[in-house]
Structure formats: structure tokens, C-alpha cells
Image (cartoon, rainbow over all chains, first blue to last red; front, side, top):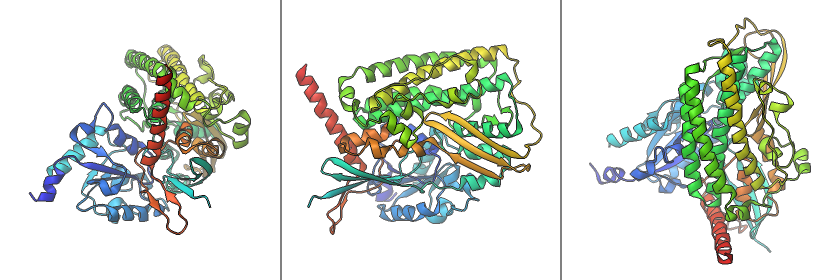
Length: 137
Length: 401
């Protein structure tokens, strides 16, 4: 295990990018941090700037207007960064694939390390996804 | 020359109804102007809807908004049923109302938590979100999913609430009611919260009429508009309930209206459960063979106000035209009235009071524009300004005691 991966084993700081989403995934992500699930006890913290983050959570279908901003945020991120696509829309585009504003699923725009399917995925599923991601390091 | 500060809020927020970019133009502490941009969340739903069958459109409109994910199917169902002139069974009506009111409870609890967070009371945030969980568990028990329930279809509902589940729902509601008592006590009796929210972000009755605001935003200014009373649908005419209003129009009044509405919702659900017992189990939908040509208007009261759906049918199996108007969109315009002239710290809670809330995970970094000297603040600074203000008030109040 390299030094960088060793650092990933502790206190993952998470940055959340909600594309053109319906809010469900956003709320479930926040729900992970509230007392029922309380991810903060593992040192997982939602941060306000991508420059502080180890993991980028992307949810929602990405429309034309979001696409540039997603690329910009990915470029600003300190590397290595792990990208997790959350929800059906994040993984594939879901219901909105046929829409005229759809700009491709997340993995066509930036590299994705983990997928958490579901509409919306339950907080347990999101936690399981992150645990699996840590397990691959 | 005075330096003008630009504070962008958005465009991406985990808790905004529709991702939008608000720009506050400030002179010192005072907000001078506010502008907003939309379109970040444009998914072309109205166009997509025309390519789907009536059955499929329900799943689509449910995904317009995750928090009020029942109000859109509700309004769409009302519109289609107006075209086809369908009368529901009583059991379907009761189930629809139960789902709608449970959603109102979880949405208002979510708002109370966020409002607490903006004021610097993170405990309220954690409490409210914790007490919201049992309601989501109820949804999981009834529909199999915590957020998007897929309960509606033309002519009724997809799933029954069996009579064996009624005691469980009753028990959870009883627990939630106690927690709301606790929250209401903590929020309504706190002198600091009074000082922070009373007289802040006032919208007068005339402002509401001028801007066409709806929902709790309008009701907090003394305007008793509620689609459930004005244009009754589902089981609302069958139960006893009253429209909650407040007169002051400030942030405190909006919080009061939302807290009291939760009690009203619990009472509606309990009466609906009583009604369910009298109806035959499994009698939840009538068979609809075709949707005739025509136009239908569907309205429903979402937790944030009136949702309006217009559907035009050409006799085929998918809508020819589908127009949607969501409540947040009209309520946002009131920011022009409620925020201008206030300090930045108060603008935070005034914006949140309408409930297209924004929260801590702001994407913008602080930066100075070298040419114009404009300073761009990020959301953390904004929330810190609000928290600082609360602490100052706390100190003054404590020193007076």
C-alpha cells in the first residue's frame, strides 16, 4: 500500500456535487450525517470546498449547463481523488437519458471509481458503497 | 466609492428545491439588490412527459422534486382524472391524503432542522432530522421506498394500506407528535430565536398578493390560501381540519405556521385512518380504459404551496401537452421584498424561510475581483456571519437576565 492510499484509510472528507437531480439523493447523503447513521463518527465529513476533499460524490443527471462545472470541479480537486456516482441518474442518467438537455452520464465526463445505484439509494447503501471503495485501496 | 460586495448563493446546493444561483449585492452589511439565475436543473421534464404513457408519467413527475415527491403525482392525477371524469373510491382518497400529509410532516421537519442550522443551532438540525426518520420508515413500510413512493396511478393508488398497518402508523404518529411538542417548545420559547426571527424578512399581505406567493409563505402573512380548502381533492373534504395562518409575515410566523401545520397533518392522518377502517380492503383503484380528448387542470397543496399541472390529451395514451408550475418558483420572487434592506446575516434566514433552503456545502470559494474590488464570499462565511449574530444576541440577552 502506497503512502497516498494509506492516507485514504482514515477520515475521508467528502465533497458533494448535485447535478440536475431531484434532491432525493442529496437528502439521503445528508441523512448519512444525521444521528441515525452518523457517518461523522468514522471521520467522514462533508466539506464545503473541493480543495479539501478526498472523495467527490456526484448525483443527478448531468445537463449541458452542469457539465462544464463538473469538469472544472474535478480539475480543481487535489489528486488522487475518488469519484462516487450516486443514484440511478448518477450511474446511467436514469429516467432523463432521453432528455434534450442530457449531457451524458457521469462516467462519460470524469472517471468514476464506485457506483451506488438506487432511486434514491438508502443511506445504508451509500455507506456500503463507501466501505467497498475503501476496501479496494 | 463604496465597495460593492457580491455574494453568490448556489448554484449547487444539496438542499435547494431547484438549483439556482442567487446573487446578493451588498453595500457593507446591507443587502442592496438580489438577482437569481435558474436553469441548472433543467431536465426537460415537460417534453419527456409527452413521450411517455400516462402510467409512466407518474414516475417521471415524482422525480421533479425529491422532498415533495407526492405532490406532483397528486396534481397530475387530479388533472388526468378531470379529463377522464373519474371518481375515486373512498379508500383510494384516504390513502392519497395519508401519503400527502405524511410527506408534509417530513418536509416541515426537514425545514425546521435547516432553519435551526442557519441560525447556528445545529442541535435543532440534528434533532429534527433524527425525528424525521420514523416518518421515512413509515413510507418504507407502506410503499417500499423511503423517498419516491410510486403510490399513485390514474384511477386510484398502486398499493393498499392494510388495516393491520394502521396501529403501527398510529403509534409512530404519536411518537412524532411528542417530538414536535419538544421541538416547538425549544424553538418557540427561546428568546434568542425570537430576537433573530421576529421582524425579519417581513412580507405584508399586499406583497404576497403582488408576487403571487403560495403555501406557508402566504399563510404566514395572514392570507388563508390552501388548495386543500379552496379546491378540495382526495379525502380533504371528508375530514375536519383548519387552515393555519399567522399575521406577522416574518420568519418567526413562517416557522409557527409550519410547526402548527404538522399537528394539523397528524390530525388529518388520524381521521383518514379511521375512515380507512370503514372501507373494504383492496378497493383501491378503478379500472381506466382510456383517457378521452380534452384538457385538465390539476392542483395539489405541496408542503411549499400550490403545485399546478395542466394536461392536454389528444385521446392517445400519452399527454399531448403537459405544463407544470411548482410553488418554489413563485415564492422565490418574494426575495426581492424580504431581503433587500436587511443585513447579510438576516438575509440568510429570510432566504431559508421560504424553504428553497440552501445549506453549508456551498461551491464558491472566496475571491476578490482585482478590477472592480468586488469581494465574493462563500457560504461558510455567510453562515458564520449568521452564527456570530446569534451569539451576540445570546450574550446581550444573558447579560440582561
